[in-house]
Every structure is written in structure tokens, then in C-alpha cells.
Image 1 (tube, rainbow, N blue to C red):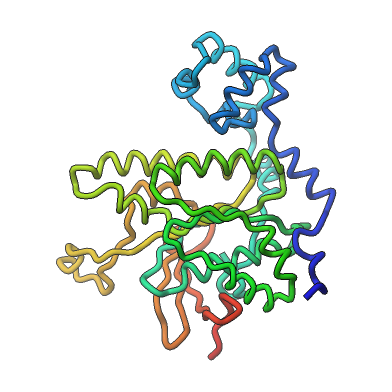
Image 2: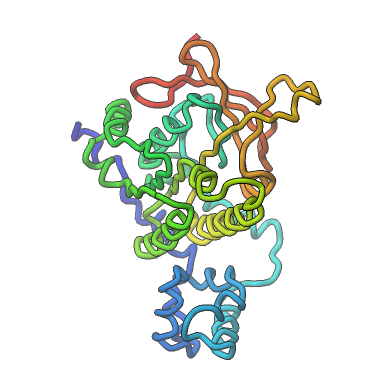
Length: 331
């Protein structure tokens, strides 16, 4: 099993240099007259990069203990000098998009990021497979990277990672060491963990490549019940999804979240063939870049369908769940 240990999170200095240049450390604000005490206050709430300041409203910054409106204005002005906050051509943005990487799913046909699965269709199995696949070297100089897994349903199993590591012929211990795991117990705890995630991405810049949340809505369904708390639930959910989007863009990290499906009582009136809908409403739908629905096929086969994507047409792919995780389906 030591054969491919060096394949996991392979060191590629040129790729790492690109990753490190993707964001600017917040400590650089000292060169623009911001004192270290104020920088530490920003770090205490998970703002660790200059871009993180750009992504935070003045109102939110003023709510940080010890930061006055005058200080916030000075910090915003300093960040604006360091960043291109205006427009850029599509050609320039296209060059920047080349830093975006792709992670294999383990199935060549099913290559991908919100997942909308029915019960027992493989969302957690896919999450486990991605934990290993993200660590393997890939195309365009991608050297592999570490993963953070936030578990809201108590379904994470390290033994599954060992089985999947066997399939890819990589070392068990190396794979497990490269996955940071946290169990979230409430929706508030889930949100608090994102501050740790941002701090960790900043601490080890360019090392982490994937953040997995399985599943995004489970704790919200428990903590907020009934229509009376629906508005508050959706507001909290929107805040979490906004935070995830900013973390992904700030640190160039892929975010993979799973969701749950529920029966739609009103769908019978429209004669839908499959009266199910994803929970979370339009807020979750609009926040996700690519949405994929899963459903059962024959035997161990599963069918993945692109539900919504800005750059991929509607399409379906079949895959199977094996001891080694998600694989291509056999006819």
C-alpha cells in the first residue's frame, strides 16, 4: 500500500505558487496603515484575506467589537487599493478561470455542486469517494489536495475511505490524514464551523481543494419547524450559503453539498411523473452553481441527472456503488 503514497497530495511547486497568488493575506494591510490589533479582530471572525474584506459589508464590519465606522472605512479604503474592484474584460476573466480545477467523481461517465438525491441513492457514498479522489493528481497540473468534511447526519465512516483507497491503490494512513472531519450538531454549530474552515484554508493556503457538507439542510429541518419559523430558517440558510460561496471564491476551493428530497403534495395536480422536490427552496437553488439529482436504477445502478448548470447541458449518466465507492455502471 506504500506504492502510491507519494501520489496523494503530490508536491507541485508551480501549482502551489498559482494557488498562493490567488488570494492576498490580510496582514498585507499593515503596509497601508492598518494596525495589527485591528487585523487580529478581523481574523477573529474568519476574515483572513483582503478579498474577504471586499466580500463583507460595512455594517457587518462595524458589528465586530473594537472596530468603529472610521476604522472600517479606512480598512475598506486600504483593501480597495490592493484589489481590482472594477470591471475586467471577459478575456482577462477567462485567464483567471484557468485556475479553477476539476475533481474526479470516480466514474468516468458521471463527471461533474448541490446534490439532490432520493433516499438510498448514494449521496454519502459519493461524498466518501470524493474525499479520496480529490487527493489524487489530475489534469492540467492539478496535484491533489486535502479535504474538509462536515457531517450533519453522522454518516461519515473512515473505514469506507480505506476501502476506496484500496481501489485507487493509495496509502490508507495518508488518505485519512488528509481529511479533516467535524460533526455538526446544530445549524448554529454548522455555521460556526465555517469560521474554522476559513481559518484553516488561510493557514494552509493552496493545500485544501474540497469542502464537503453532508447534508446542508438536515440540521435546519430539526432546528426550525413549521411555517412560523420558515422565514427565519431561510434567512439563516441564505447567510450560510453566502458564506460558502465567498469561501469557495476566496480560496479557490470546490464546495460539494448534499441535500434531501421530499414529497410534493401539490405535484399531483400538475400530473408530474415524479412528485418530489428538493428541500431548501429557491434560496438553495440559486446559491448552487451546478445541481445534480440522483435516483435509483436497476440493482446497484444509480442515475445522475444535471438539474441545473450554467455551463453544462441537461444530461444523464449512470453509475454504480461498489466496495471501492462510486464506479462506472456495468451493463
